Structures are given as C-alpha cells and as structure tokens.
Image 1 (spheres, helix red, strand yellow):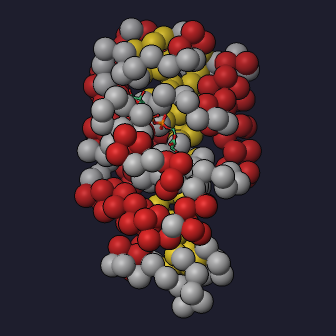
Image 2: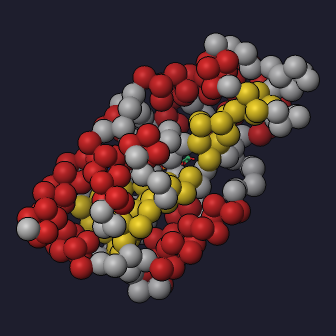
Length: 244
Ligand code: APR
C-alpha cells in the first residue's frame, strides 16, 4: 500500500494533507481519544475545553491549559513533520489542513498550514482581547491588567470557528486531486467534512490511522499497520525512488 500511495502522490498535481492529534503522538503528545491514553480519558473536555469553564471555572481552566502548554513545550516535531515540510517545498503537497493546536507543522517548516482549531501560538485576554506573551502565561501571569482571564488562541468548544481559515481549507480541499489523512478519528465536525469535500470533487483519499474511523469506507487506501511516522518515512523513500 505504501508503493500505491507513493505512486498516487507522484502523479498527483494537487495533493493536500489533513492531520489530527495522531500526527503528534510520536512527538510525545497524547491524542484525545486513543483507548486508555487519550487526553479526554484524563480530563473531561465538557468541563474544561469550553468557554463556560473559562468564565465560571477559571482556575481549573487555566491549570488545564498551562499543563497542555508545558506538555507541548516539552516536545517537538518528529521526522514525519519534517517530511511534510520537504514535500511542500518540493511541491509534492500544496498544504496542510490541521486540527492540531501544537503548531508543529509551522515549527517543522510548512508554510501553508490551516489551523482549524487555532493554536497555542497566541494568547490574549478573553475580556479586552489584549495580546499576552506565551512565556508570561507559562510563568503564571494569567490575569490581564483589566481583570480579564488570559487564554490561548485555540478554539474552545462552543466558540465560533475561524471562518477565514475554514474558507481557505474548503478551497484547498475542493482543488485537491488527493487528500492524505494522518492520525485523526474524524469524530469532530465540521473538521471531519474536509476529506468528504475533497472526495466529492474527485480526489483520491488515503488515511493512516491506528484505529478504524466511521469514514474509512470513503477511502481508497486505509493504512492501519504503520504508524503515521513510519508510513511517512516509507512513502518518502518510495517517492525518492520514483523521482530518480
Ligand atoms: N499513528 C497512527 N494513528 C495514530 C497514532 C499514530 N502514531 N497516534 C494516534 N493515532 C490515531 C488514534 O488511534 C486516533 O484514532 O489517531 C487518532 C487521533 O484521534 P483523536 O484523538 O480523536 O484526535 P483528533 O481526530 O485530532 O481530534 C479532533 O477533537 O477534542 C477535539 O479539538 C480537539 O482537534 C481535536 C479534535
């Protein structure tokens, strides 16, 4: 199957990558829904990852997001992230649509990265919107001068999604002749619609995911026996052979 994906990539003109938390587990970051190790096994997203918690449970909310930021700061992109950056530079892929907020695709060197759920790159006051520094937040400065709560620039459950980012992602998905999904359960909408949008516009679909998803039947290739990192390394090797 790795050969098939490499050939599909080699002959595609507008390949797009879609990533979920499974893209970053091999950097050390937990995903959300893997059995017995996903983040939502330890923390209840309904209690924490939403605007209500930010307003009415500020202490726990801030504790949770400072914990996630410390986790992200402990780890870094892995070889698979760097392969995706090389592929964009070589024109093999046109960009990445990601649900991840770790900004590892930017850190690895990708430029066209559409962060559907925002990222930990920015922090701002929920009340007056004043920007705050990531370091300050990590050091515990989590209350703004105005008295409001400083929060990360990620999209919380119950918040408006970044419409401009979604528009750009939709354009990229509609132009795709191939989409590779890496490490997502495809359980969260509307993010999970992008592979379907690509398919409806004639794209071939590939997924690399350890567990089955409800959308596997739409995919032309389903790789479950290789991890995201292993699959990217293997596909990249085949691509180099084809390019010789
Ligand atoms: N290789 C292959 N698959 C992997 C790997 C890996 N190294 N690590 C994890 N996986 C798979 C898991 O089996 C799981 O099916 O990746 C998938 C990750 O799914 P989720 O944990 O649901 O993460 P994701 O799809 O990104 O969640 C979407 O949910 O909570 C919200 O906002 C949050 O952006 C997130 C959204």
